[in-house]
Length: 137
Image 1 (cartoon, rainbow, N blue to C red):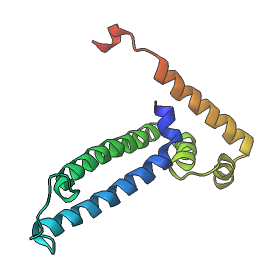
Image 2 (cartoon, rainbow, N blue to C red; image 1 turned 90 degrees about the vertical axis):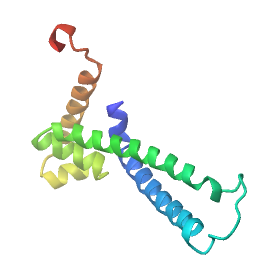
Image 3 (cartoon, rainbow, N blue to C red; image 1 turned 135 degrees about the horizontal axis):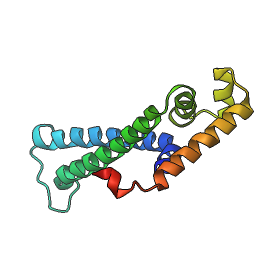
Image 4 (cartoon, helix red, strand yellow; image 1 turned 30 degrees about the vertical axis):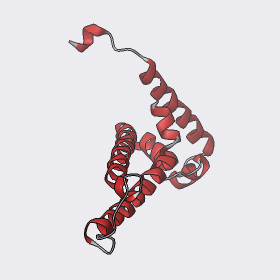
């Protein structure tokens, strides 16, 4: 799951921005119905205006979950230090190709590709390794 979040980080970031925009637009529309130019217009139960508060709550719920996912990815990247962190941040947060990350860090592309593969193996190992129950107590 964490590896998927790394791969989807940029897409997730875009989804958060779109949800935030949708939320602000819905709140503006609700304000029009409650205290603006549409205040005196009668709503039917089926109209979108009548459902705005539910729509806003749904968007806020989805936005909170996606923002938590972004936080988790940044937290994961933050657990890596030095070069590992720079590689992960450059590739997944900034959306750069590994060859560009290598160039910016003054390292050979092969070294960065191998280092990235090593980091991914570490993430996969941690993800699939169970902690012995005796260590939990």
